[in-house]
Length: 396
Image (cartoon, rainbow, N blue to C red; front, side):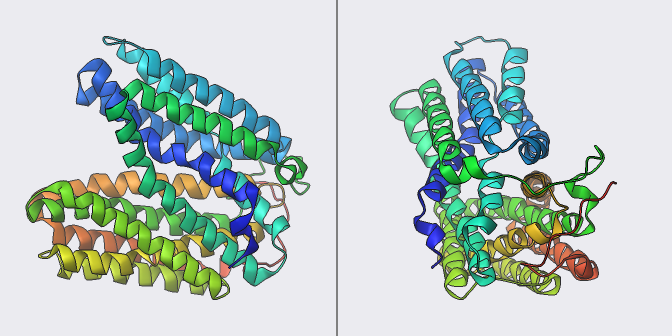
């Protein structure tokens, strides 16, 4: 197991990322309580997601130019204040104000994940251990997505929906500050980059390939979430969806640990494509077991075990694929690709589930992963092997 797993800065990064898994459902429940409208709550939550997708790369680029400390502390302050303000709004609060606050919170969400991944090459020298470290990071993030939504819902039930947002905001601000104050984060400096303002992470064909690959994975994730819910509903109620999705996340955690112990994931673009193909195939198998909760639970653990190895392998290729001075921005683009893919996959899967049921929805999820694999195969030569020398900065 890579030593990074016991690092204090890594632990702080995981805690700082926990609120991200709490925000969507927390905002949804609170805004519905304040406005009395699920439509309004959905609009606010959607605004939050769009703002996070837009803000991530912009903040990543700022980190690459100014360093981590100031950006992380400023965004923690702004997003935390936005959450606190949203939390204290009373019943009848105007919808435009809630939307504006969601936009601020989303755009200013601290880029802790990209910052942590940018630190890993300097913290872990050996190439195999680096790949293992990225797999551990991907697996640990699954813990936040498994535990975050239940935590915010429990806090909302025991306290109030506003108090739940205050708790999330406090965790976000304090843990981000703790991460930013760590010596390794304060000492980090990006590689020198071109002075051309048009230079950016997406100027690299390799980064674009990784964005396409993880965008396809995101489509699979979103469609699978809907398919699992539809399958649980067809078997007598959606109550089983939560435990099934928890098993999915547990499978990812298990896969990440196994890959980390084995020395990391894929080393090349072709290897990444193979992992994406395995991800798609394992999720296709879910279409054959929609008649049994027990069978779904068993297969979804196997399907989930491919998530962390796939994402971890893609992350391990960023340092070599990204132009000099754009590493954090590149990691942020991958996060945005997954987020956009997840939203689009969920939307498409909702229509398929409504019309045809859970089995075809799992097929849709697998097809999305297959598309990501095919695109990666076609563009495999654009990806330098993990651990290779980074490409020079170029202007778009």
